[in-house]
View 1: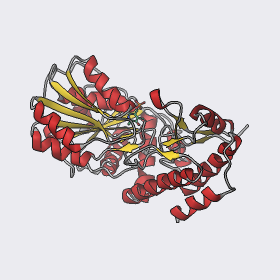
View 2 (view 1 turned 180 degrees about the vertical axis):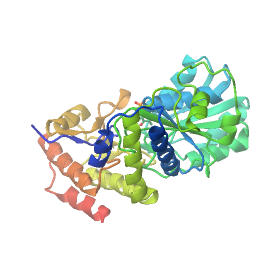
View 3 (view 1 turned 90 degrees about the horizontal axis):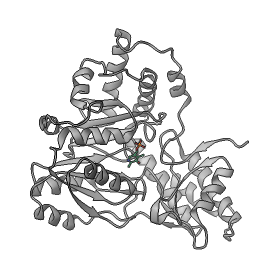
View 4 (view 1 turned 90 degrees about the vertical axis):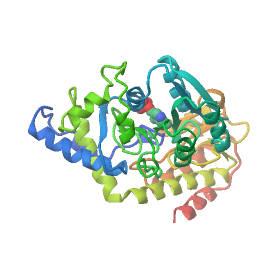
Length: 376
Ligand SMILES: *Cc1c(COP(=O)(O)O)cnc(C)c1O
């Protein structure tokens, strides 16, 4: 059996220190011991979010955090704009549709980021838009959207509209400054940059987003105003996943020790190293504006992405393929969280081996040399 390696944009490898923290005996969630753990963890979490107030922790997958933030801030039946540039953008459009909001969709060709003038025009045309939804790192296409500029344009055109951002794959991977950039709702999950097992979701709200008390939240469990009251007292509204909180505390220690800015720089160079070395082997980059979280690549012509992903899997490595209409040719390796530059070398070396197996004629280790040069 091969050694198993996770190089997909989530879930990712979990460090031993985090796994060990998770193996602590379960404690009761209504105890001072838990409150202490929660209190110190949430301070570190805010640092990793680059905010000076609270981030709400939910026991759910990342999508729940987006849904919770959306439902807590956007009035029922109102008009919302979904920037849809891939699978996750599409998910948030579906969310709004399902809850009966008046949905305006800005559809963007997969692999591209948005045109700001087009955004401005849509906002001018619909001054009654209450919220704009976007992904930061659109994991399905490998694109990083400039949410700072999106926030500026939104504020200029419709000062009262909230900007709701899916940062599930960008947190602790790409520069993200919710307060400084004037974002309103930012959601994330545990299984990507935070290098935890799946199961935790996080959502931060700006002051004005908290102030938009709509009192109509249709969700019972995902009511973050109720959660906030509990979490301000270092407790949770429902049973806390205690062992995941232990794990979170441990992973945040690792992240803060490495330093956020260093992590942002590293991820960008890892992704660039994978992209450039893959290009030297006949692949093409897919993203117009590259997300540090994931390297989205087109296979050389004649090679199916599914075959390439399967050839990686045969060697014990899990990378992601493409979805929907890019399924045939898109593949997406990622070196997130605990992954380091040596993991980048592994990905590139295996890609070379796999492409050769699938019939590409490529020189030995040339791509690895390219990656090493970038990583230095
Ligand atoms: C992984 C990911 C999600 C994830 O959602 P889950 O609910 O944790 O499966 C949402 N948005 C983006 C951009 C992601 O990369």
